[in-house]
Amino acid sequence: MRRPGTDLAVTIAITVLVLGPLLVGGGYWLVGDMVFVPHQPWKSAWLGLDGSLPRAVPMDALVSLATEVVPGGVVQRLLLVGGFLAGGLGIGRVVGDQRWYARAAAITLFCWNPWVYERLLIGQWAILLGYLLLPWVARAALRLRADPRDWGPAAVVLVLSAVCSPSSGLMAIGVLAVLSLGRDRRTWWRAAVLAVGANLTWALPALTATTARVTTEGVFEGFAARAESAAGTAASVLSLGGIWKTSILPAERASAAVVLLSCVLSLVALSGIARSGPDRRRWALLAAAALVLALLPAVPGGSTLLERLADPLPGLALLRDSHRYLAPLGLVLAVGSAHAVGALRERIRPDTPALWSAVVLAVVAPLLLLPSLAWGALGELQRSSYPSAWGEVAGLVGPDDTTVVLPWVGSYRGYAWNHRRAVLDPAPRLLPGEVLIDDRVLLGGDRVVPAEDPRVVAVTGALAAADPAAALRAIGVRWVLVERGMGDPEVPGGRVAYDAGGLRLVDLAADDDVTDVTKRSARSRQIVLSIGHACAFLLLLAGAAWILTSRK
View 1 (cartoon, rainbow, N blue to C red):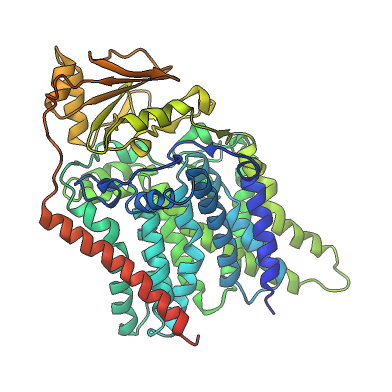
View 2 (view 1 turned 90 degrees about the vertical axis):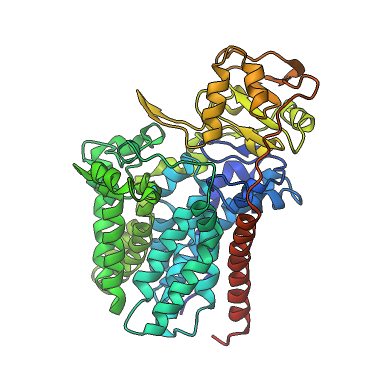
C-alpha cells in the first residue's frame, strides 16, 4: 500500500539538499536566465501584446502579478520549492504501485540528475518547472487513455506546462500523445483540443509577432549537445547530461568513469521499463524520441539538415537547444528505476541479505554520481541583493518611456554585487516602459547568434551614428542606462539624471523632442491574443472544476 508520507519525506529532503542556501537567507539566486526582481512592473510584452517574440509568455505576466503581492525573492523560492515538491510527489504517484524504496529510487533519480543540474545552473528555471510537471502529465495521459471522458487532469497540466515555456508545452504534448493515444478516436480528438487550447497562450503571440525575426543560421550547431568527457556525446546524453554550455558543467562529469557509471544507472533503469507492464512499449518510445531529439543536432550533418528545414519552417528554431527535449528521458528513467528496484527486491531471499545493499545503492546512486548538485550546486549559486540604485533608477523612468542599456555587448552581465556570475540583464524586468538590450547571443569564439528584434538593429545603427543622442531620440529612445564595471562604452550626450551605485541614467530628451514611435499593435491582433489567453485560462478552470466534481 502506498504511503504518501514517505514520498513527501524523500522529496522534502532532496528539495532542502538542493535549495538549502536559498531557503536560509535573503536575496536572490541570479544566474543565467534566472532573473527575479523585487517588483516586476506590468507590461503588455508579458502577454505578447506588443508584437514582440514571446520568450516568457505568459510566465512573466504571472510573476509580475505575484510581485504585486509578495517580493520577488519570495516568488522565486515558492516557484522553485513548489516545482521540486510537484516533481517528487508526481513521480511517486506514477509508480504508486511500487514499494516505498522503489518509489524513493524513482524520486531521487528524477529530481537529482545532470539535466536538473544543468538547467538550474544555466538559470532556465521555467523549463525546469516544466520538467518537474511531466509526471503529472504522464499520470493524466494514462487516465485519459483509460477513460476518454476523464480529460480534466490533462487540461490542467497541459496549461501549466505551456505557461512554463513553449518547449515545456511541446514536451507535455509529446508525453501526452505517446502515453494516451490508442485506437479510441475519442481520445485523439480530446487530446488534440486540449493540446491546442492549452498552448494558445504562447503560440498565438509567436505566430503573430510583428517585431521579430527568427535566426536559424548556425544556431543548431552552436546549441548542440556536447561531450562532457572522453566517454563521448552519446554517453553524456544517455546519462542525462551533455548541455551545450560547457562552462557550467559539474567537475565530476569531466570524468569518463563517472559518466559511464551514470550510463550504467540509465541502462539499469531502462531494463526496468521492460517490467513496467502493458505500457512498456510506450515508455520505450518516449525514451527513444527524447534521445533522438537531443542528439540530432550533434550527429554529423544533423545541424545542417535542421538549418535547411528551418529556412521554410523558422518555427524549428524551437529545437535550437534540442538538449532541453531530453527531459522526458528523465521521466522514463525514473519509472524504470522503480521497477528495476522492485525486481531486485523480488530476488532477495533469507540467504541473500547482501542484495539489500544493492537496493540502497540504487536509491542513493544519483546523489553519489552527482554530489555537485547539493547545497546550491556546491557554492556556484550564491545569494545576491540588488543595490538600492536599481530601485532609485526604476523610480525615475516612466511607464511610457523607452530605455537603452549600455554596454551594448550581448544581453548577459557579470555584476560585482552578483559575484560576477553571468546573468541576463535585469533592467527589462525591473524598469518600467520598454527597455532595449543587445539581444545577440555570444556563444564564445567568433560564434554570435544575431539580434532577432529589428528595434535592436535600429539601436545598433543609432549608436554608430555621428550624433547618437539625436539618432536615438529619432527612434523614440529617451533614456540611456549605463551599467558600470563592464567596459567603457561611449555614452550619448544628455542630462545625467542619476549617477550612483554603479548606474548612470542619461536623459536624452531635449525640449521634449523625443520622437513618438510607441508600438501600437493592431487592435485586431490584441483581440485575437486576448481570446487565446482567455481560452487557456478557461481550459485551466474547466479542468480544475472537472477534477473537483469528478468522483475519480
